[in-house]
Image (cartoon, rainbow, N blue to C red; front, top):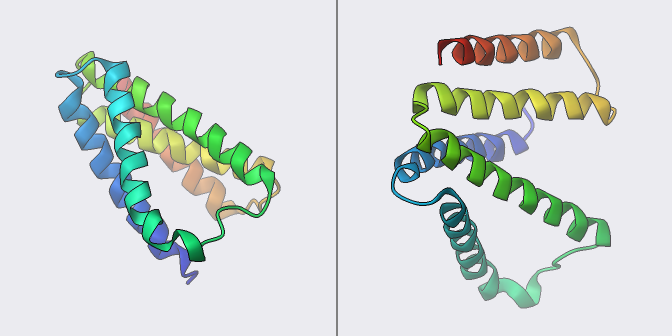
Length: 141
């Protein structure tokens, strides 16, 4: 097993809990202000983790890293804004969470294929199941 799978599982756990926190916040805060709070909290927490080892850490090795990190930041803002708007409109977490997370799985897999990753029958079957599951939940909403 690839050791990176442990980090992926931790990220999935964080994404699932993130979804719950978004749903809980949505009715109590303006969606854009909520997105700013989420991003600001990430900056502060990141700095707390980075600063103690700043002298021994290489921050980047190529300008593409800055570009793609900034683009990921724009996507993170869009995730926060639209998740808060979705939940603020009354969408239940049992539908919104799987659609947001499942949809992101499908997009990531398709982009991976587009970027040259190997396409296998099992990957296609998994992708179809994710899309079908999200589609069923959308139909229930």
